[in-house]
Image (tube, rainbow, N blue to C red; front, side, top):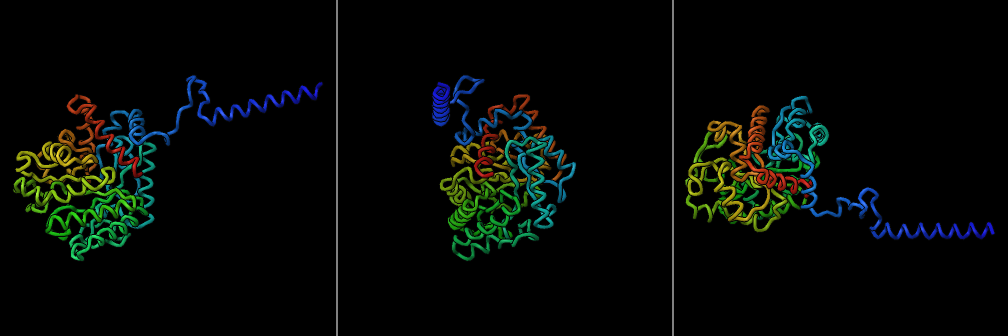
Length: 386
């Protein structure tokens, strides 16, 4: 009798274990605290759902930080940089020659930036780590990677494939350093200092498209600049504000062609569009492009259909800094349609821009809806690539 009883009990226990396995495997095991199905993991969520879930856990101060990319000083983590990332939650860092000594140093520095931002700074996703590695005269990492030729030299080859090859080669070297954004290619027509592929709009468009393919192939975020085109500019916006006097028709038939073709062909999550500080009277006679609703929202968003991240050129350039307080220029950029503003040099200026945007959100000048719109674009790009 005892043996029989133990056999029956053992069989019953086996049946219960198997039944539990079937129920668990079918996804119907109940959660003891919710009396419902167990929660699904993040792998089952769509990209938009992951972004929404992430934003639900963010404070307003953390959201505002996502709208600012900064430059830092030095070649290693220090207390000043730590304060910037911990207190202001900035969404990205752009590197310059001043930050680069060797391969090992850059790798360690970038890792410390990421660790600080995501640890002490509670960054919800990795930082954008950017650089201007266009080629020719505009290179930042000459001491650690082979500098690419200027875009003009690449264009002279006559084959867009050469632009793709250089983009893949440069991307591979930058990614080894921990850099995930290259602010290239230049999509301007006939810009000086060898920065344009050509004076011909369609040639530029074809080379830009090839470079975009190369960056995408390597998983490198890239940036088309300087919308809506600065090839006609006569005054350097680093120094002073000036106008590009071209008709709407001239802009559409020339300067806008590379940008429009890229928007039609490329996935918006793969690239920024960087907006210049020039005034284009045919589009907006009163505001530089980086402060213009007509340029960034009406033209770039609504007419051309760009759905990705719009970022301004460095706002410490004379074209803006000589004419508007830092606390105001960031607010005006966001209200006009920018998703991120770039502040490359002085820590106090970066804090001023941040505080201006934060105060505008708290006062209702920038609505929570407008803030969330840009944060959502930024996080969507980060979750896609980083």
